[in-house]
Length: 534
Ligand code: GLN
Image 1 (cartoon, rainbow, N blue to C red):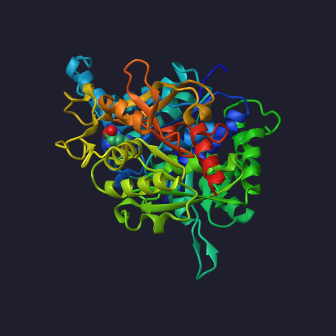
Image 2: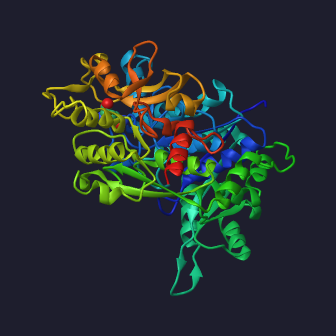
C-alpha cells in the first residue's frame, strides 16, 4: 500500500470507556481485511514509562519484547492483533519532553526558543509517523489516553489537528463517547456526546467516526440525531453496546461495517467481509465451554481489577482452548497462612502464584505454595511466584530456616534468591530491571518442555533478583529441578518438582505472550493439569 493511514482514537464524556478495546477491535478488523496494522498508545502523564508506577495507580505494567515497560493497553493490542509491540508503541508526555530537552541541551535547536508548538508537537508527530515510515505499517492506530479537554492531553490533540491537516484523507479521528440512560426519565441522553464533539471542534478537530458506548441497544433515530448534531455521516455513528466478553467487540463493530467505513474514508477499496475464522472459532469454543475449571490466583493486588490483567486473560484463553469455562478465584496473599490455607484453597483445581515486589503478602504466598506442594495441586509460580516456590522449598524441605530473597531480607542466612550481579551497581529505578525477551533452553522431559513442545523458547522478563545458582545441587538432590536456563548467563528461568503432577515456577512472564489465536502453551498445560486434577 502506498501511503500509511493514521487513525486517532480519542475519548470523551468520561474515562474508562474502553478506548483500548475499540482501538484493538478496529485494528483486528483492518488486519482481517489484509492490512498490516499496529496500535500505539499516547499517555499524557509525565512519567517516562509506567514502570515505576504502583499497580494502585495504573494497573498492570506490561512488557514489550524489546524490554519497554508499557501501558496495559498494549497487552490488549497484542492479544487482539497477535503481533508484538515495541517501545515505539507507547509514548508518554515524559518521553516527549525528555527527548526535546536533550535535543535542546545538545544545541539541536540552533538558538531558537523551544516551545510546545512546534517543538513538542513536532516530536509527537515524529513518534506517530515513525511506525508508518520505519516499520511500514499500512495502518497506524494511535490511542490518546485520557479524555478530551484534559489539560495534559492538549499537546497530543494539537499534534493530531496538525496531522489531520497535513495528511488529509490519510488521517481519521474516531471519537468514543458515552450515552447515559436516565432511569427516572426512561431516556438515553446524547447531550454529553454533542458537547464532547464540540469540544474537539473547538480544538480544531472534526471527528470522522463516532463510537457510542451504551449499556443497551440504541434506536436508529437516536443515532441519526447524533450524526446531525455532530457533523458526522449517519453510517459513521457506531454503537458499542456492553457485551459479555471484550473479544466480541470486533464482531459488534464489524456488523455495523466500521472497517468498511474506515476503508472508504481513506480511499481504499472495500472487498468481501472477512471471515475471521480463528477468531470466531475461539468465540464458538468459549460459548460451548460450560464445564468449569477453578483456578485460584494468589496475590496482594487481587482487589484491583487491572493489576493482573494479562494473567487473567491468559488463563481465560487457556481454559477455552481446554474447552472449559474459567472460574477465577482471587485470594489475597495477606490473608493466607499455614493454618487457613488448606481450608481456604480446598476447592481449587489449580493455583497460580502471582508476580510482585516487596515483603507485603509474601508469607501468604509461601502458605499457598506449601499447601499446593504437600497436596499435589497443580501450581504455576510466575516471577516472584517462582521465587516464592524456591524460598518455600528451602525453608520446608531443605531445612534452611529463614531462607529468603535478599529483596525481602538482605541479611537472610540463606540467600536462595539474590540480586543479579549486573543489578548491584544500579541506582536508578526506572527501566533498569532485566526487561524484555530472553532465550531459555528447556530440559527435555520436563513439564515446561512438554508444554512448549521444543527446547528453545523466548519469554519476557521483568525482575532484579534471581535463583542463586550456588544452591542448585542441593535443590536438585532434594527433588526441585532447574529445567530451564538462559544459554548466555546460565540464569535459572524454570524450576519444577517432577514428582508432583504439575508444579512449575518460571522467572519469566508467559502472560505477556498469550493471544486469542495463539494462547501461551505453559498456561494451556497448567490449566490442562488443573482439569485432570479435578
Ligand atoms: N520482585 C522480584 C524481582 O525483582 C520479582 C519481580 C516480579 O515478580 N515481576 O526479582
